[in-house]
Image 1 (cartoon, rainbow, N blue to C red):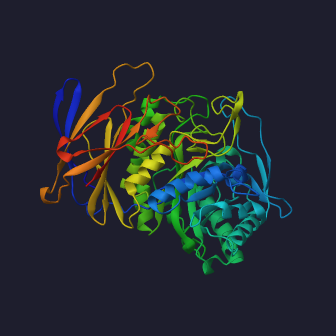
Image 2: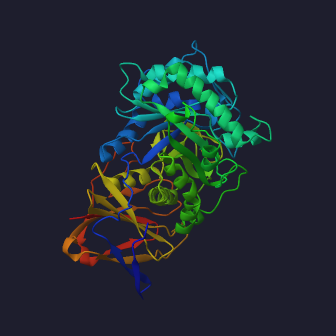
Image 3: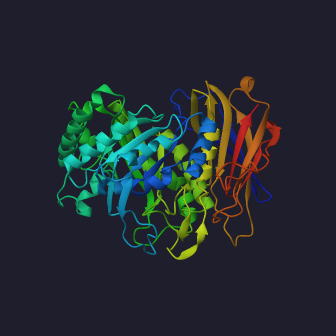
Length: 517
């Protein structure tokens, strides 16, 4: 994709000024964006708390419905992750029985080490908003075929119910099999070819048992923690070459899932907030997958980030839970579309530092595990990235988004087109304005349109207002907040308006959305 051009103009009174060239129609290869581009991956050990048991978790449902109300479709929900490979089925269990390790300073809310679930556990998906598409993982890590088949039967049974208004799109077999050699689930010499053999055996037995070829549900392949980026080792290229798609079960694969984190807090050392937010870092963390994406598209499969977030092991304190992480998430998910990634599933678990949503009351700190007064359900700053991306996308059937190339290390831009016509533009200033900083810089953007005859004449301006990049609350989007008791938006909407010839100012640690009239 050829990026759009930006011209350097001048430096005036400590304010940089640019002319930003915006086309009035999308490039031929501009991606069509799913209304569920922003989706969620849920750690499945505490799934009943997310969904609610006897009744819906109304707070969680509200946060999903907020997004549905903007784009017309709720986020997809993937349920699985690390605890996926620690789950077994027992029909006598109501919902789930979990065994947890003790919390630590680094991991205040650890995943369960053993999960036993019954049929009612899967039926809780009925609590999701009508029309939700679901991915559910079954256990490959323990190499127990019977357990995986029993789980798959229970999953299919839950979605076959006449009362079910949600759709099971995929069954995922195993979580991060490329790490099995390191975590003790397999021998040290475990290879991608062995994975292909195991996956094919599990997929064949599952598909034959539940008659997958007769229903709309398919298999989601991969769910790898990383990639070798070449035709050997654990990569999409390698497993395609090793025949993973050649069996009858393999023909039921329609998408490949990659997992990706921008860093790790597993040893208790995280990165700097500015490093996470930096435009070049975001692009470098994603373009490494371009070859994998192309190889997957060559197989006529979709490529998704089926589990992703800022720092592995639940996030880094003072980074993953901050307003700056919202700017990172927004640029990250939008840039992902530019290299052919069709959906981005941000991982969430109860008490995880990088969550978009904390769906239940917490009794110990997400930062270090220390006891605290009960903290009611709430959204975290990254949730605003999902809201803003949804508004950029809008609710039209066919929406394309193209990156606007800005010759500045801090400013990112994207243009959205509805049915081929320019509708909106978004700009992100990822310069971190932190507590203790005194000079908040600003950049003025003059807007230049490629086709004067179709150029808009006026625009509305909506801003994400952030005090400091390291704030953990009190963000407002167009003067409105989602930091409410019920998760619904509150406050009087405030947007500016201006002729497009006036351009727009954008401060450090700010987002502006322009709606063209």
